[in-house]
Every structure is written in structure tokens, then in C-alpha cells.
Length: 100
Image 1 (cartoon, helix red, strand yellow):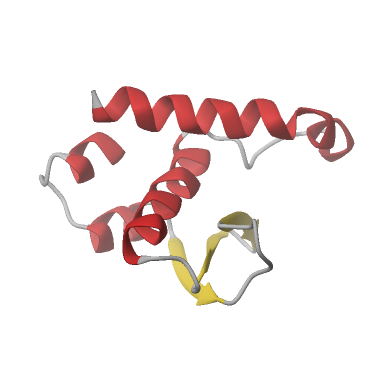
Image 2: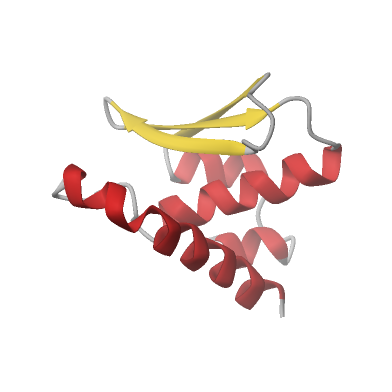
């Protein structure tokens, strides 16, 4: 789905509808660009509103990658904490792959 978004075949709104996601822009602490979580079957993406336009767009892609890679559906939430950096790296690699 993100590949189609990047290629201009579908709109951001269509991607958000497909993933039942919404985006909220809030001031976040320095160093936090964004986050994503699922609550009551809605994927909530929070983006740091203090970022530049392009960093907000890149962060949105990164958070959508977490959804597309099914990283929000971890069975063992305690073990998830030990693998956060792996998931972050995987989402970054996925976006980089799609952009090539």
C-alpha cells in the first residue's frame, strides 16, 4: 500500500482509510518525531508538530511502515520492549527499500 502511495497511485487519505488510521499533530518532546499505537482497532499516528513539513512527511511514512509491517500486533508486549530498536530499523529499511 505504501508503494502505491509513493508512486502517486493512491492518496494519503486512501492509505489512512485502508489502515483505519488517523493522524494527529501534537508538540512532542525533542527527539521524538512520532509514534503509532492501536486503540480499539484504530491505528493512531501521532506526529511532532514542531517538525518541518518534510520531516513530518517522512515520519508519517515511517509510522505507516510500522502498520504495514504488522509490528503493532505483537503477542507478548513485555518482549516488545526488548526489540523496539529492531522494529525501528526494520521500518526505516522498508521505507528506504520502497524509495529505491
